[in-house]
Length: 145
Image 1 (spheres, rainbow, N blue to C red):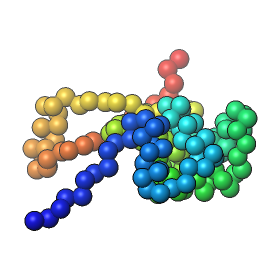
Image 2: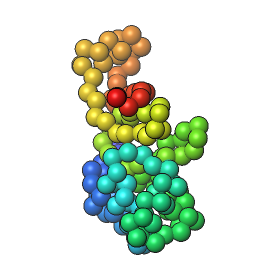
Image 3: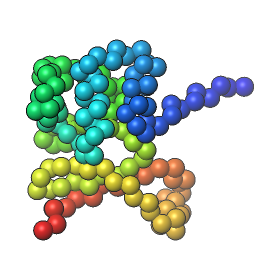
Image 4: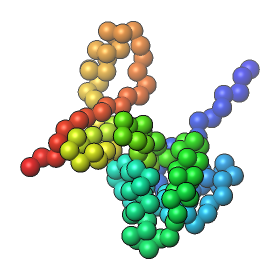
């Protein structure tokens, strides 16, 4: 009999993310908390530079190197999401399965919950012969005037 590894519970809140850090034995430094708090407040993905700028504007002193090191560690452990884009990496909090809206003019990436109609999923499953368990959609566009 094989023991199935239980999947870690989804990160639905800042508290879940902080708890996951502790479970993994990651130190919860002040800087790391700042980054996680910011990413959970922002409903969009940010570059390391934007994270650095926003934290310092909030009066939360943190160095460039510290931002980069913490983002690396947190994304490696799957506590935050890292999106590779042509102009660099963007970071955001992880939530349940979600899709992205990519703004071509402002380069913002915003999380959005999209539920496809079951008949569309069935159509894709039949076409390819696969059982779909999850999906993500990337939308692209410009801010509406």
